[in-house]
Length: 346
Image 1 (cartoon, rainbow, N blue to C red):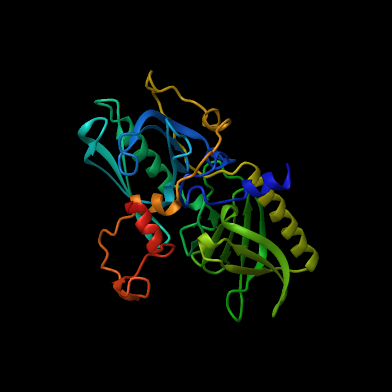
Image 2: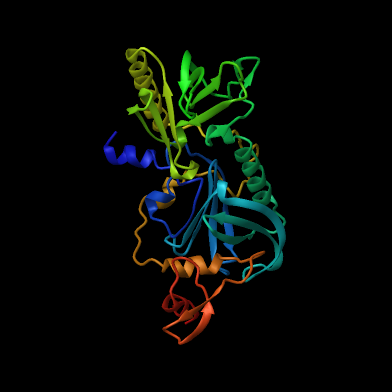
């Protein structure tokens, strides 16, 4: 595997972020991602009303792209979805009809997406999205750091489906406090778990998916195994120590090997399959859609963002003085300029 391919495999944005008009490579399934359902006649009623497209549901995100211009597309991570509802919407292709509403949050911004299934009388889209999101939401231990959780039962680690325990190490110090806490390490093919010997509820579970680096470094306690997490999980620095030094380096090497192996084919924990596929919607590989796609011209990102932005439930932005206009205006959201907003209106 090339270094570029390895870097792409270790990228962790797909289930977390909302991205607009991404490149063909970013539309392809990453390692560990698989297609659960495809719906070939779906309108993006919010941002591209009247434009027929395809909605692909994977185990970690929703992908929509226009049939007429595949460079117009959306990638919506399942983690970003806050609520899923069905309400009436005005579609240029179907008129007033029941549509799928998604309220999402990415960073400090909230977005609303509306998708309309153009096949009359079909509830496949709503059912699939709700069921897949539920499966994703119930498998967070595979992808998120957990502190002081119910990870053990009478001293025994609760093994996740498809998880395999590789090693258990006693006498491991957690260096999160001035005194340190003595505990036990469990190393699996999906995560690293530590818990205190005297209190199994004092614990931490760190999935490889949210691990940025694993190093042996100096600390005030001496050499320590330091695990750094990604910005998505808080940029934690977690320190552990065990003796002798040879054992510490052995554990470090073991975790590095498992970490690399994990990203070659990540297990995201979403167990779901469509039992019956509609005859007019055969399952297809996403790669066949985007392999030969060429982006000739991309929409301005502020255009895409503004279309889907929603301030539901928020107060007005504070007023600020605009030298450009010579009067007070609402403070613009991050990443926006007056010129870009005028471009949208025109």
